[in-house]
Length: 477
Image (cartoon, rainbow, N blue to C red):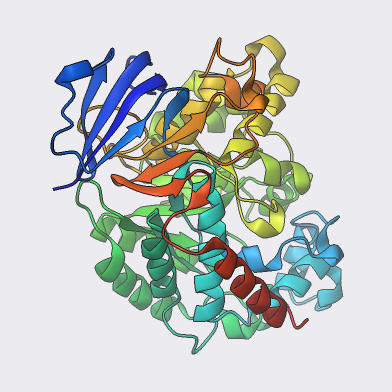
């Protein structure tokens, strides 16, 4: 049995049911759970006799571990590419219906996807492992303790890509929520990806079962879980969406995809299917409290109410939405209606970073810009990244600092120059001031994974050198 005592923490922002902020308190961690929260100086009564480590919390602010609800970790090796920096994500959507009718076959209409899919088709287990270590390592340095990855590119004969991710997560010590993503519409079928990265519906469903049985752990405090996540309504067939929903509910796993990211998508669906994107997803069984969508920018009033009524969630990706000129999501309205919302960094090819601390500031400022005094508060945004994200992932064991919950948290050094004058409201600091430096400590599942802003379980410098070398080779440089 291992114990950690974090003693005399200056402030603990719990994000618990009472939204408590505790001063001069201590946290006792036993194995992977929060055993006790001791208010006031524990003094001689401190349970220190059998504690394996005591962390001095003076001057530190403690927060629940941040939870990332949408990423594409493999894209870490295709970020900051000059050719695609100024393109919108879906400039091709307005042409897509014509392609499906075989009236347009020119992939030069879609330079963003053509360029990137030609890179992504070369994925292998080594690329996945190193890009996952890099992306999740960056996330963890900035307070993230759980990462969901939407992986949907499975080139033929490349080995166990999800296994490579699982190994990377275990090496770092981060909590991993995998997805068995999928695409079954290639270029020859009227889609966009190369033939080498798509599979048949039967192959996808068979491999989905394998992934669930191998990696989905339903236990309290699980380090690995799995969702089924066809890429988008435009890269998969209606049959795959329907069958994935049936399979997910048979095995009790969640469903995830991209939706309502652009107005082009909305116009395409109206032309191609005669209905709006959310209505299409409802038609194929993709709505309910076991479903969450990435982005969700362009929902109308009735659709927001439907999301709230059904418990369907949204992963908010503000920086990606800005970079790709997609729009500002109606997060403040969603929260007032009771829509479940989490926070996410999105894939590195459309962000191009992996810091939920940065994401919180951008999310807060965008809502201020759009809604002024009716905007979500900075603390609301912190709760998106903690309690909200936990909710859309279907987890009640993470996202807050409370006795009996998983020991996932991070601590900031409030004495840093960048935080001078910010002590009046530690709940708001990520939105109002912004935190740009790594956490002093990140603790996942009761283990210290970041100390003094550096990863504990791997050699950062060695990883950076190896990953950059592999990245250049992968890009053909």
